Length: 108
Image 1: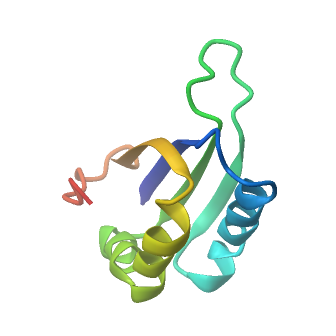
Image 2: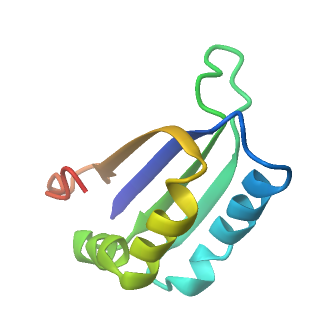
């Protein structure tokens, strides 16, 4: 099992509704990408660090399932057309489940 996590901050100068539109589209990902498991997303409610506004966590059965998702044309198009224009900062972490071999997805 592979856990893929992303935390992010929307740009401050977005037009009204832009962030909500991207968040709504993200919520469709588990139905668009059947290999996704245990999708969770939401606003950052931490009282210790508010540098990121939102995040999501998703699991994939195999590293290949994750790579297939990351390299799919629909994901790449979303990142280019919808994600990059509205995101100020992001951090991505991918970790193996306990006992699994480390993934090799680095840099993607």
